[in-house]
Length: 350
Image (cartoon, rainbow, N blue to C red; front, top):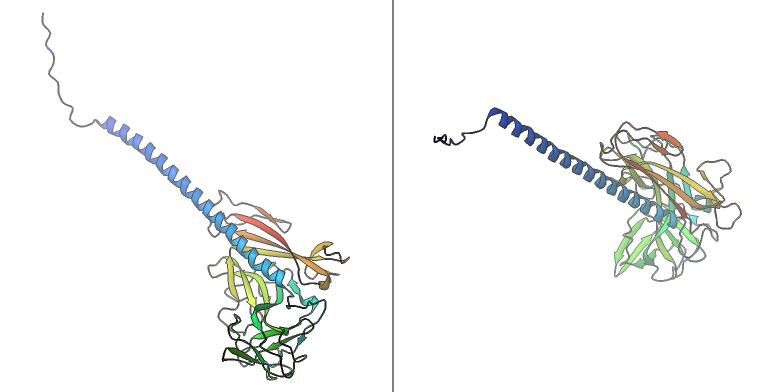
């Protein structure tokens, strides 16, 4: 007997069960791809923000460290050998804004304020961008060199000061300046600054100074410096995040770029001062500014601690607690925070 084979029939489409199985498998595969993408993106965000945090910390420390090292710089002399004569008159300022009362002595080399309020300074803080309450501030003063050596001896102690015009000072009227040689130094306000024939002429009249007379008629080996008086502090930045700011105390007030925002992501700054009580060049202990018994003339080192935060939120899986300045804090966000600390020696103290 011969068996007959049934004719072959081509399949037409898929059954409902096959489609559901295919969709389920596809959903699993797509979910895996999305999970890999999400994890990779989050890893990139964390690494990118940590890189920016570290770079911001490095930059902030660079600003602070440079100016701390420069504090008290007068050129040839030191504050241990002379006390600059200050004739800059804060009571007779230019019509637009005043200048602070400068006291350029060994005790004024580095000054600080501990645990400030959010409105500790009207020029530094504002209603829209308040300063960080509980943070510290530091003020540093020094002469900024810019290649402004005298072109010749002064004829008299009230003579105009002439320097080469190709210096990098960019001296303007009402700038606070410092002139010094190895034995004497004066701090004064420039009442005019004019260029001509390769020479810049600086006047120091008594309409902005207590007198138009310097300590002496300086010789040609003297140098003219721009007086730098910077105050560093933490304040809300333009992005809404806390930032490191710097106020120029020697700049004419009311300027749109004073104070200026330097580095964002600086959430707090704590500073201690190393007192060298036995004059061996090494601090015996570190204490905050305003500590009873702290003699600023004995300070030979400054220790700065910055609490840095990432610029983006949602990086940590949960709100991560951190320890800073001896206290444990649990923030209300999921940013990542790190503490950076450095100790800087004062080069011009003695």
